Image (cartoon, rainbow, N blue to C red; front, side, top):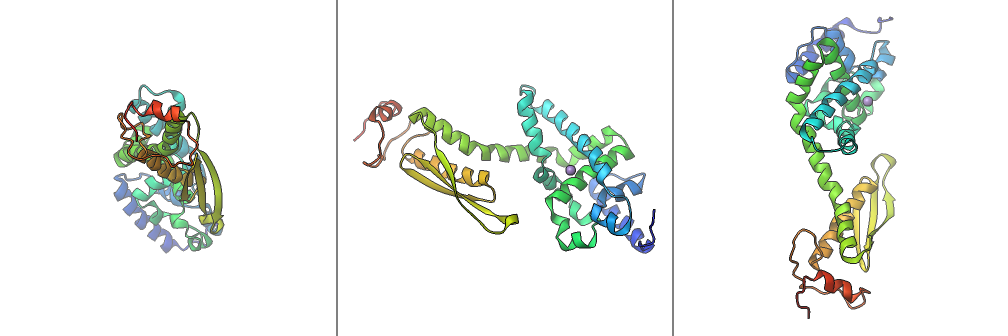
Length: 277
Ligand code: MN
């Protein structure tokens, strides 16, 4: 391998710098080269003709996937395979693993090529996710699966369940709204993307949610996120009229406006027999 482009002093510095990562991890590599390789982005290896993390990432993808799978099976013994797969996909997704990587400041240890540094590569989700996988591929090779598991769970056991919790709440708005509208009206709300603005890499989506005469608007960095926000607002509107699954006894203090075409029979059904004006 042609290494003449590398300043040996700089390489020394790299190892010294990586000791800080070992401290954060609470794991000391027997083979320091493995750690360096795990942190080396392909942009650096093409600039300086060194190895990069791609093969370790390939291996680490399986290591992390297995550790997360085990934990999910242990935590949710009653869940079916389909649901467990969804959970795992959320955790080992690019934003999911990037989030774990940020917890140990992994971006500070990435060894990047010049252009990648200029592109803000230290904080890019894709780089953080890949290097994170590579890191656990490296620990696995340097020790074994037990050690990789121990290090992973010591740092991230709580966080992986936080990822699931947050996602679940978010997912709930849309499905919850549909439950409400199906139950009380036997209809579904409608979602429509009415605007996309901003540059390609940081677009804002605007989604309109319509249900009967009600309209709510949600914004977000993805269509899904915008839909969730619109659904959340729609839930609030319907709840103001007592259409809620959360409280068993609804107090219908408000009335739908006159121009709303709602079958009176259905309103009566859901009104728990309470009197209306
Ligand atoms: Mn990857």
